[in-house]
Length: 587
Image 1 (tube, rainbow, N blue to C red):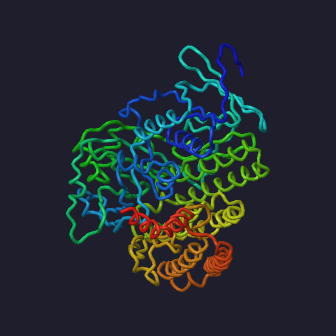
Image 2 (tube, helix red, strand yellow):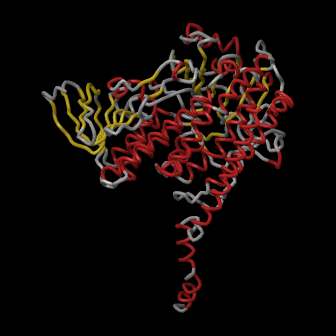
Image 3 (cartoon, helix red, strand yellow):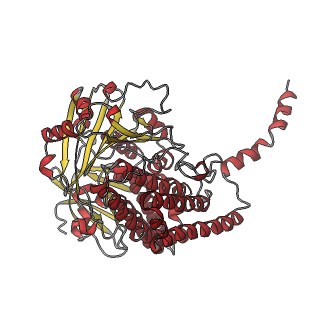
């Protein structure tokens, strides 16, 4: 690397990119590791206009919301500056030629607020605000463009060359993080990127989206629903489905009535030339989801963007050479379910723990690096498989509703309690998780996708499966139900939440769902097929193993309080009566 005509500065960590992943990573490092020296580099001005800073991915789900609210201390900020999220709603047109009103669709509504509240965010505002917070905490921001990086092997100091105006600045650090999105600053330099459907479980998608202000939301729904759900349909994330595509409608500003409206399309069904301009996107909406076209026409369009190729992934996420790729620089698959910020939350916590362990020269630092890389790769792969076969299935209301129900079972039954208890940072737990996750992607999930395709091909009607209702499987089960009292008893410290209790129940009900699905979709032949018997038994075996792990875990923590803060308060409270008596003695 040419270092002529530069200033030189030294840091513990240099983060390239001040988007969502970059500013969140910086804040997490600053809050977690005392006195750490962090530099952030981004070519955009910190005062950049929100009007021209279009983002994709404004909807949070529970893990990302917990990360921002608890790990980054931004709960009050989110309440005061961004919009609430009332769950996720799904809509399929009854007749594709008639989509003028919401009544022209079949629906799966969020019938209540989920136990862990979430948000929609105005990404441009969030990134500017959190960058400002980071600077106030001591992070140094360089408003410039990265022109080169020197990624030395092992623990040797790395370098980042930044062009700022007419000068060049050299930043040296032990750790380099690429959070610069699709610039792929590290990915291209290290040949770390994988594109193409052959590397993405068949995924080949693109996306068009716009923002629109001052809309008339009564076109969507007037809010009066005395016999309806106890949540706001407008302030939910709303998904609209059709053959080879799905659309989102997300409210991102309550004052200006601003919406993000976009589509993810699959190229083998809908080619780019049908959507690659604002006019074409509007024509597509008018032809397929005219209710959304009417909403847009009621307001003022702010901006439009199109990505012809949405999905990619990386070969390595956390390198033994102390470089890391996170956010869109690492991978993106599809905005469906809004998993992007959740993958970022898991990655950031892993990176911070690796950096902390390496700076402290801990003996297991490299073991953590390797394990966290494997976990985040396995988790990303499981997210990738959520979109396998979407091009055929999205527009089929019955089949897709069964698929959504199945995927919700894993989210609420495994992923959320895993995050609550910080099990994704426990080396023993994640070694088992990686094995199970990879086995499911290649086994049960792959086989189910083929069966979903078969049902779509014969236009089978299994009924509309509602992922929010509790009257569709045995025992009043609902996907939102949690089986450890982590919320009620504030078990938010690492490994206080008994994830095994949740996994035991989740695997059992997944087996029940699988039996019902086989019966409704394929009859007795489906239930008795050897492969299907194997998958049913495998889920029941995993449930049994989780039950044993639950008992062992309960024994190990039998003397630990659910919450050390609550226990401390209880101990302090023991002097309460004595305190009152001492006050009376002064009268």
